[in-house]
Image 1: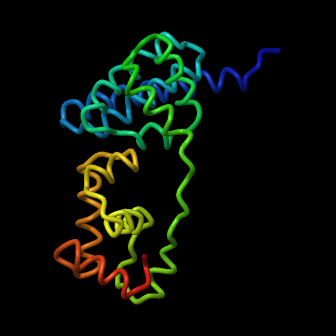
Image 2: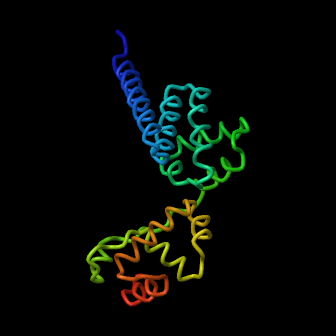
Image 3: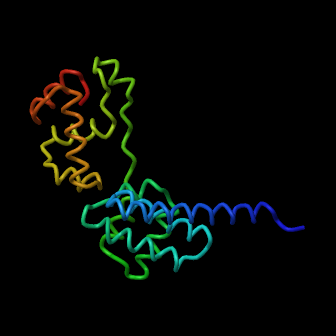
Length: 189
């Protein structure tokens, strides 16, 4: 009797890969680089799930090439340990070795404790700060510049700036000092 479960899994992976291919083309046509990088990473994982590491490395290499200039890290690390395995194969193949090593080391970073929205609501903010926004405010208060924060958190400079702008809006601040003062008043730091 054939294993219908295995056949169903293979069929699901093929369907997922067809969907990812359509999404990849749409992301390319729309110039959505963040989405394209994420889709390429997922395509790599789909090939890896089928046991085809050489085919998995092709979209991964392209994703890394697009991601490196912006310093993307979380987009890969948040996927999980299957991505770590692919990075090891990529590093062994000499693909983007310094960036790949940086990404591999990001898997070893301890997770930061999450800041809960409940705490933020309790201090009287109309819209709670996210854990990342609080984390970035703490790094600003420690005297770090935006690029240093990006390097420390393994995120892009643009992402740091977006979090800072969001925090300013939620705190009703127009500059770093005002945001830190307000966050301290609310005992968020």
